[in-house]
Amino acid sequence: MVFGALAIAKLLYVPIMMSYHTHVPVYIPGYTFSWLLKPMWFVIKFLHRAADLTLVPSAAIAKDLEAARVTAANKIRLWNKGVDSESFHPRYRSHEMRMRLSNGEPERPLIVHVGRLGVEKSLDFLKSVMDRIPEARIAFIGDGPYREELEKMFTGMPAVFTGMSLGEELSQAYASGDVFVMPSESETLGLVVLEAMSSGIPVVAARAGGIPDIIPEDQDGKIGHLFNPGNVDDCLSKLEPLLHNNELREIMGKVACQEMEKYDWKTATKKIRNEQYNAAIW
Image (cartoon, rainbow, N blue to C red; front, side, top):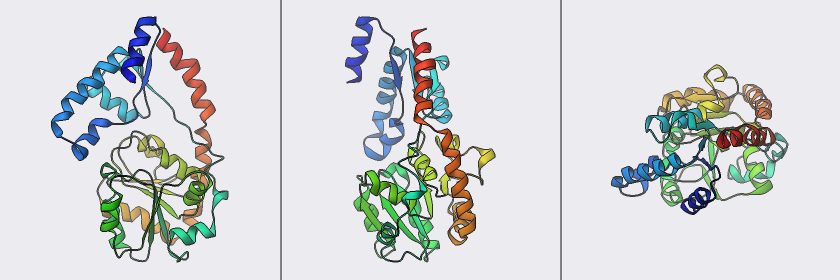
């Protein structure tokens, strides 16, 4: 479809703005032949050099595209994403949902992860984490090609796989956990991190991709925690105090929820309309 859109834009001589929000080259080695990496970069460069403006969800992705010389640096702009704070809110916390996610043990510390279950998400890292905190429970909300392998990996462990959730069920799943853990190193932004924070639960996430845009260094430890990617000890040093200290968890969750009020879809859309479209036209 993108080639058709590009052709029409060129024929009509109208500006075209593209967004880059799936870091496809990072996924290629885990899903298909590694030799496809160079052709994929060629396709990405062809498309984005033909566009008048490229929008990226985080500063980290902007740097990656600049380093790969995908397009001119002055044609790359940040697209500030939003979160629906009405749909993702602490008021959706539900005892019934917590019972389901904890497999009938709601008094146990509960870790939640929401997202596509793909090999690129580094979800096997969570197995190493859970091996060290046997008193905790973990719930995976989502589906994907890695689910079957992940379920085998967690056989005999206190893990629940709910499959895909939508609407109020998803809102309840976020708000009913204690801590949201994001081990992925390939997130262009991490919308699920925004949604978890908006739901009032603390986030412990890998310091990679676009996640430091959501939890910057000066806010690390205040609105959420970042850990060094792949470092189980570092992750546990941030995770365990939250799992075992209700007051600490509630304070961070409340501050995170307040922080998410800045991530408003209306504000993000207004910036695209008033600034980014004008830049593409210019």
